Length: 242
Image 1 (cartoon, rainbow, N blue to C red):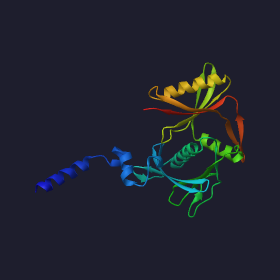
Image 2 (spheres, rainbow, N blue to C red):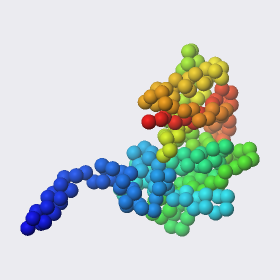
Image 3 (cartoon, rainbow, N blue to C red):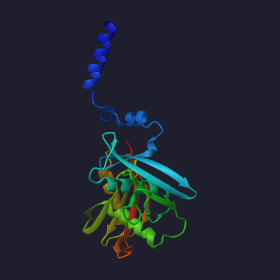
Image 4 (spheres, rainbow, N blue to C red):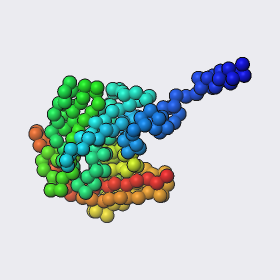
C-alpha cells in the first residue's frame, strides 16, 4: 500500500511538471536522440534544427530537420531557418573561404527548393557543399548573396556616415557573423562601428572578434549575381562570452 501511494505521488508530481523538451531541452535531446551530439543541433528562429552529415570524398551533404516541441515541424519559416543553420555550418567548415555549393538535385520523392537547396519526402532540407581553395566563382557568389539575403538588415551610422548592417543568427558554438557596408568613411570607421555593435550585442565585455575581413555587397542580376560594392565592406565573426 505504501509503495502504491509513493508511485501515485510521483505520477501526480510528474503530471504537473513541464514536458522535458520545454524544461530542459539539452537533456531531452540527450535522451531522445542519444546518437546526436551538441554540434548536431542549431537553434534558429525559434526552431531546434537537428543536422545529419554524410561525407563523400571532399563533399559534405547536410540534412536538416527543423523541430518544435520535440517534433519535426513545418511551421512558417522552417525552410529559411534550415537554410540559415546550413550557412552557419558551411561557414564554420570552410572558415578560410567561401564554400562551393552543388546545384540542387531533387531526391527521390523530394523536390528542389531553389538553386542550392532541396527537400526530401519527409520535409527535411538538404544541401551539398565542399570547401573551395581556389577563388570563388559566379555560383559561389550567388550562394554568398543568398546567405546574406537571409540576414537581418538595418541602417546604422558612425558619425555622419550611414551604413548597412547585416546580421546572421548565432551558430550553435556561439559564433556570429556580421557584415557592415559604409557609404563613405574609412576602414577605421567601419571597425569602430563594428566594435560598438558587438559591445551592444554582448551582455558583457568578455567578447572576442574572431575575424575581420574585406567583403562585398552583392545583388542578383538574372542568372548570376553582381557585386555592387567592394569598398568599405567588412565581414566580422565574433562570439559573446558567458
